[in-house]
Length: 168
Image (cartoon, rainbow, N blue to C red; front, side, top):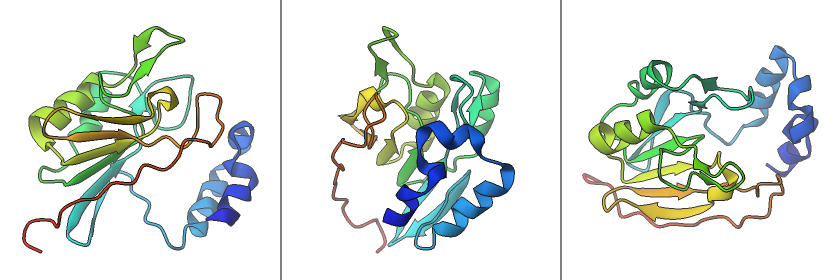
């Protein structure tokens, strides 16, 4: 992983210089990782689903308009997931952006998480200002952003324990 961080395409200013074929190269470097894009994996009995989508913001990757476009993506998340991983947060959970004086989380994601999927854990990190942990009494929400709002990778890792999944 250290070699990946040193690569040019990992640095924020160079992202816009990537060509489509560069993305395959990036994925080929992840030899001990699993890339989840609208997909699920089971690890040690835990069902984990990952989706990179976020409400449109400054033309970043995986942006979609709020509303039906995002809801269509969230509707792909199967019920019974233990851990949900998304790029951005649901509305109201570690999504406050002081500079904008507003919450920027996704209401469609919030409704999907709380009304249908109900994972034990929802991990995200797209809103760097929201680093930390919250709960709604059922799901624990972790904004695990490594970077600060100024894109400095100084937030410490968030470590958590999970009980054994049912049936293991």
